Image 1: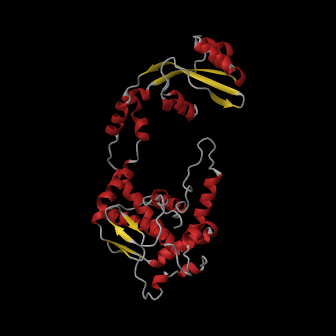
Image 2 (image 1 turned 60 degrees about the vertical axis):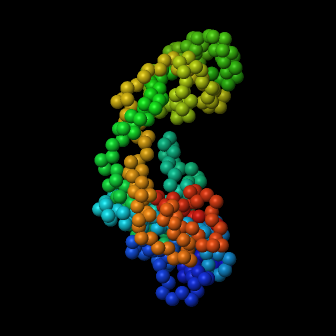
Image 3 (image 1 turned 135 degrees about the vertical axis):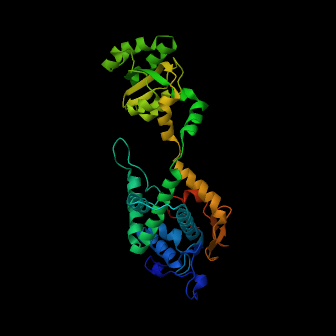
Length: 363
């Protein structure tokens, strides 16, 4: 089995007599060299030989598994194709986009490395931290030239995304989302009952028997301010306003569909304490008041336009893939590994051609 160092000069066993080593792929004359691909494979293995070695190294000395490497090459082909399209659109990266691109590339070599910090704590999970460490190790194992090449590709994609997003009008999409179910954006007048877990069953029995929610809350709620307000939690707020006010998102999701007078399932607030919620009133919210909130939830218009552009243009681009690495299928924008290479079971979980490179599963 080849080591990471040996793979730096990797040669496919089928091409050991290859003189000049033709490019792995060409996109409108933009070449991806075999050496560049070799270097990426070696960096993956050097960064995490225990995990990536079995996935990428072939059975013979100085060979690699073609299904995995075809996946990596596929990602590079799409990114280079996006660079070609960016040039045609006149999209030029800004310095800010180059800085962002380097961060994105550094976190593109391991699944989960792109995870955002927890909004409440500002920290990322241990799994995400480990993935970021592995991904950074792959990036650091690359030559400066290859690092800069990958960052250039990503920065150019960001510039193209920005160009495509300019002038995008989200208002019609937002209105369609609103009109599909306006009640989702109602302002909710919430009430709560907060009790110890041991008191929950008795409270539920009283509510089921028809006791008034507010009267029960005033009598049993352990929070004195909420009890004094007959369970009322303040003014009537839309779901997004409830989230902004600090109500936990799972609770917002729980209460949003409640009908007036309907009692929620119990929610554990902390060990030994539970809450019940109901909606005393729902107030329709005009579209104009929630338009910005709806637009913030819509897919990024630039990314959507980029996907459409790539999908519509890829079939017309002059793309050539060395058959040792597989066969280019212009209709799907993918490389089919050569005969004998096992294809990963779930390609979409392994390679994100738009956002970065991840290690394909072995096969």
